[in-house]
Each structure stands twice: as structure tokens, then as C-alpha cells.
Amino acid sequence: MEEDIFNSLVLALSDVDYRFVNANANIQRLLELYSNTASGLRLPPPAAKHIIENLPDVTITEEAQCIICLKNFSVGDTAKKLPCNHLYDKECIVQWLEKTNTCPMCRFEMETDDEEYEKERKEKLRAKQREAELEILHASMYS
Image (cartoon, rainbow, N blue to C red):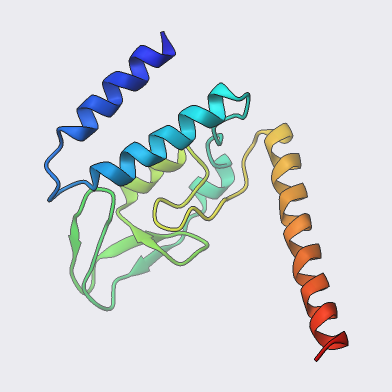
């Protein structure tokens, strides 16, 4: 059943006009998500409600575009700003974050209300910090 849905998505994406969507990138992302869920890994949960509710509004100071809906922002328009500093149309980013806790542009992970996922996310962050500290220590010893 899941494989049929996945194959339908791949076929649908492969028929999309390349000017609007990079089908290969989307197919690759679907393959990654499918392999992760098939191997027992979970998809990221929605962003925490307090994160979504407290996204700051910013005034656009130079022309920009929402990469979700492709809306062009003019100087003076307002947009929502994620912690990674990427800007999005309010309706788009709220709908996005209600489904997943990552920035659509850079995949920066935001806090979730899922305690188990948060525990795993914080462990990954600590492991990255330890790795960075070890690199600094190594560089200071052998430079």
C-alpha cells in the first residue's frame, strides 16, 4: 500500500514542469523520506505550537520571494521570519510548520511538542557540539 502511494507520487512529480519544480530533487527527497520511514525512522513532527504562534513579523526592506508559494514581496510588505532568518509568506509557513519542524530552505530544525523526538534531536545536537569541540581541541594540539 505505502509503495503504491510512493510510486504514484514519484510518477506525479516526474511529470511536473521543470520550470516550476526540480523533479529530481523532489524525487530524491521522497526516496530519502520513504527509506527512512521504511527502516523505522520517523518523519519530523510539526513545529511546537509556541514556535508557530511567536514567529516574528518583519518588514521587507528589499525585494524577496516566498519559496513556498513564489509570492513576490515588495519593500514594505510583512513576512514571517524563522530562527534561521529565512522569510516566508505567513499563510505558507504556518501551514508548513504545522506539518514539519524544518525550514523549507535550509532544513533548520525547530523545537517540537513531541517529547521523544525532542530527546533524539537534542542528543544529535549534543553529539555535533562534542564533535566540534574535539576538532578545536585537535587543532589546538597539532597546529
